[in-house]
Image 1 (cartoon, rainbow, N blue to C red):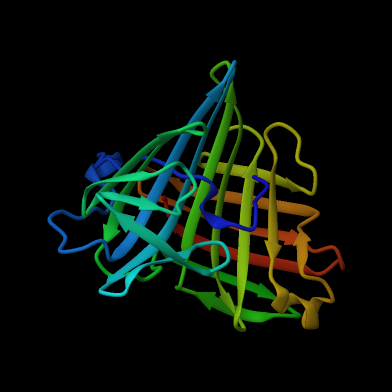
Image 2 (image 1 turned 120 degrees about the horizontal axis):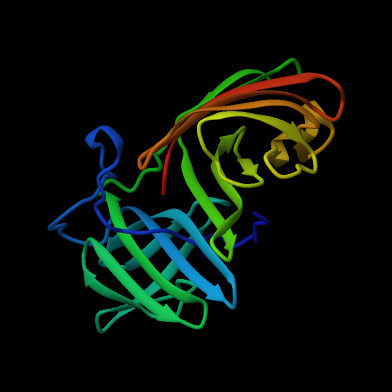
Length: 255
């Protein structure tokens, strides 16, 4: 998924669904206000192409107004709340169904949002990275985005990404599979073919240790150990453009 600078581009369902083993996505009811961690989905279609995008963000509602923090860049945006709607989100005006769900329909498609938790914190899993230039680093301040595209019912690609903060700057880790993201092993490539995957990382904090702000592993293996309604978990080991090895493991709560 190619991502724009502004974060809220895309999103997935806000319904309480039951997955394997009885697990269900986190959700809230009867919240006092809009403050909390949210997931948002956008479904759109054109001719034979269907796309679904999912994102997470936080809202903080006070007497001074409504503040949103986006996932990808961790930037703050002031939103307008007026007459049961929210202005400033990317898809038309969002109707406030209640303090736990929002909805909108616009030219881009149908959007839904549901609150994950009443605390406005990004706590959607954990991630570990290791490379000679970076050392061993762990992240728990995670938010997650995902997208998929299909043509005439066949999945063209699946993407799941997480962002955190690394040395004060946003860090993006993006996993893209050409085809279905599912349990199993995938060969890593910079330009993956059908059935292969790519792992891309981006952060301004990479500039000092790696002399670049973005990299894609050129070879290696991605292993997905869980692909459920609630979680995407796995690990990877691959070669960076400088020839050194980077390894990682992750547990991402699906948005």
